[in-house]
Length: 473
Ligand SMILES: Nc1ncnc2c1ncn2[C@@H]1O[C@H](COP(=O)(O)OP(=O)(O)O)[C@@H](O)[C@H]1O
Ligand SMILES: O=P(O)(O)O[C@H]1O[C@H](CO)[C@@H](O[C@H]2O[C@H](CO)[C@@H](O)[C@H](O)[C@H]2O)[C@H](O)[C@H]1O
Image 1 (cartoon, rainbow, N blue to C red):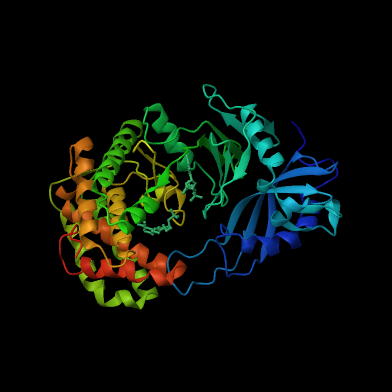
Image 2 (cartoon, rainbow, N blue to C red):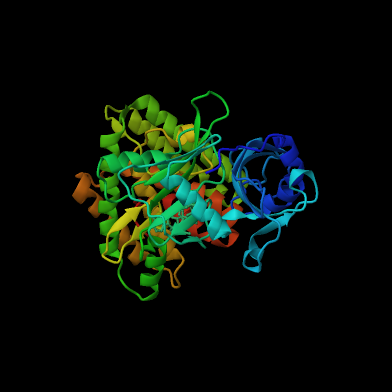
C-alpha cells in the first residue's frame, strides 16, 4: 500500500488544473449528482489521496470535491439547494484506456501534472475495485483515509468485483456475490446513519439488517476528530429480490401479497425493537407534537405552492395536522426512537427462503443529517410502507385497491405480532404521517417523475375526504 497522499511537488491546485475542465463536464451527467440543471460556479478539491500513484501506467486517485452552484430558488419549492455539495470520486489514471473500459472514460488530460494521461471512473476497473477491498481487508491507512473492518469477519482476498447496475443514489460494488461495498457519493459531514444504525443493530443481533463488515472513513474538514463516512461493506444477500419488484410480479400474476406483507410488518417491528434497545428513546409530549404537526403543515404549504394540483385539498389536509397538534394537547405521550427514516418496498430484500431484510438506513437524503438522526415516532416508517402498497396497487392496470387494502392490514397485523402494538391504534398519528409522506411524494414525483404524479395525488384525494387512513378506496 502506498503511503503517499500526493507526490511531493504536486499540489492539489496543480491537480485541480489537470482535472477541473474534465470533471466540470462529467459530474453533472452522473445520476447521483444532486445539482443538475444549475451551473457550477466553483469547483475545488477538498482532499486528494493517491491510492496508487500514477507514476507508471496505472494510478488510482481518491478525491473529495466541493461543487458550488447558485442558489436559484427551484420552481418546485422545497428546501433551498445548499450553496455547496461535496462528492466522493475515484478516478483511474492510465496512459491508454483498454477498450473494455471505454464506457468509463472521463477524458484525456491536456494540462497540469497529469497531462497525457486518461482519466476514467475507477469503479468499472476490477483492478481498482479489487484494491479497495484489499485496503479494507488489511485496514490500510492512506493519507486521511481509514479503511476499517470488523476483526471478527473474514474478508477473502479472491473475490471478483463487479459494479452494481442498479439505478441508485450512491455507487455499489459487488465482490464475488459475497460482499457489497456502497460508496457514498454526496458526502455530508458527520455520522452517516447508514453505518451507524446497522452497526448498532448488529450489536443487538438483529438478523433483519446486514451487519457492516468494513467501512471507509475520511477526515472531516473542521475539528481534528471529525470523520466522514465514505463507504460501507456488508454481506451481499445473494438471490434476494426487492419488495417493489416482488409486489409488482405478484400483482401482475393476480396473486395475493398479504403473507409477504405480514412478514414485512414483523421484520419492521423487529428492527424497531432492536433500535429502541440500542439507542436512546424520548417521550413526546404536547410541545413536540405541536412541532411535528407544524412541520407537516409547513411542508404541505410549500408543496402546494409548487404543485397547484394540491391546492384544492390543502384545507382538508390541514385539519389532519391540526388533529395531530390537538392530540398533543391531551394527557397522552408517545415514544420516539431512531427509525429507518425512508422505508418503502424498494428498501426491503426478500431471500429465497422468504426472509425479509431492510437496507439503506441513510434516511431521506434531502433532509439535513441532524434531522435524520433525531428520534421519531416509529409509525413514520409504517406510514412509508403503507404508502408503498398503495403505490404498487396504483401502478397496476386495473388499479387494485383491495390488494393494497389487504397488504396494509396484513402489514399492520404482522407489526403487532412482534411489537405488541397495532399501528392502527394510533389513527390520528398514522394518518398524519401518511398524509405527510403523500405530500412529500407529490413533490418528489413532480420533480423527478411527472408521469407518476397521479399516484400520490390519488392518495391525497382519499386522505382529504376524512376516510380511514387504511381505506384504499
Ligand atoms: N446487502 C445487499 N445484498 C444484496 N443486494 C443489495 C444489498 N444492499 C443493497 N443491495 C442492492 O443495491 C441496491 C442499492 O442499494 P441501496 O442501499 O438502496 O443504495 P442507494 O443508497 O444508492 O439507493 C438495492 O436496491 C439492492 O438491489
Ligand atoms: O430511492 P430512494 O430511497 O431515495 O427514495 C426516493 O425514490 C423512491 C422511488 O424510487 C420514492 O418512492 C416512491 O415510489 C416507490 C415506487 O417507485 C414507492 O414504493 C414508494 O412508496 C414511493 O414513496 C421515494 O419516495 C423517494 O424518497
